Length: 272
Length: 157
Length: 110
Image (tube, rainbow over all chains, first blue to last red):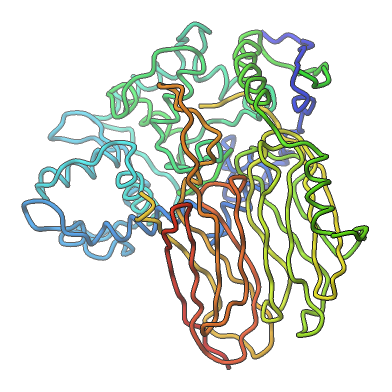
């Protein structure tokens, strides 16, 4: 239910209501597939320009660091990522290569009996194959490795398969997305489906697509994971956020990433 | 608070307005911190000008009219100059009138710079004027300013 | 943390004598402004920024910048230069404690 309200504000800077970017069908090229639009199409021109320049986009500092870590031997097994997977930039072929891998995540893990995302697969590799300590979720190392792995699929369309064993987890994620929560009693969909393209005070609400994560947010002044963004959104509606890597958030990631199917992977994206 | 009160018409749900209220409160506490003033910047400019009246022209100060986020506002400045050994831009200073401190950055060129043109990104606490001052090798001083609006957003995260 | 600062430089591999070209740089740094408070303790987080950027070519300084806390985190700095002979572009960033970070890039003229 929408009301037209006059909001009294003591903040001079608030007197602005920027116009949403026009949406002429097809104008956004690869960033628009059918009815879905990347967050890129909701970002300001200057923010898009930062993303587009790989020597201006600060997210690439984390790509570089991920590349360093890729060949760093760590753990009791004396291995690096490279020991098993070879050249990360090669098209995935058996175990080697990382190109294309990120388009399919989250995937169903037979051994875990549930879906896992890229962060969790990285830590599986570290613990089981490298015999190294797992990275902490939002650590520089984890953000760098995730950003590096996802960057190998840069420009490739998201292509998450929800058939088979993952299907019930997708349904759980979908239920989470449409369920009202928190003191403000709002569902993810209230903002990102019902009001995508509308202003929430000075910000333009996007469709909340997942194809750019980890994303360098100007607000964070560094890249952050999709689950960090989930936690932020949940806190904003004054709901208790779930833990990074919790089943709830991984299921939500399954739903949300599938919802982004067809959009190009933009990691490292740059957003407000 | 000395800010002008403004009435803003936005179409949104009642709940969104509540969420926005929290962000507005944060904005108020932030702008309550000690801050530079336009006269602080005027003093800094006068100091650089050393008795001269800064001239207008020669500087192109390129910034967005509205910054999407005050943490990272792109800034590009160029100063018209042949950049020869005898005629070049020595320094370019950037000031912010309403940040906690007025200085943003100073850039020092040489004839080997070829072009007096720089880009960086800056923090802005709120809507304000950004002032650029160029010192030329012959001692002349030029200035330019631009107002950039900073939006206080709805979705912190 | 500052010790592990990561820098990124973009400059053309090959340039023409006397023709200005752009150099783009990025470095990882929080640029702690000294204005923020620790959410838990309420105490001010001390200022810790990169305050100086210097670009030298074949040991001659061609450009420098003084940075204040208003420069954004992970600072981006693009500037121009000319090169009359092949050589090495040396970039250094200095923080509030005087620690420096350096990165260089070879440039070919011709």
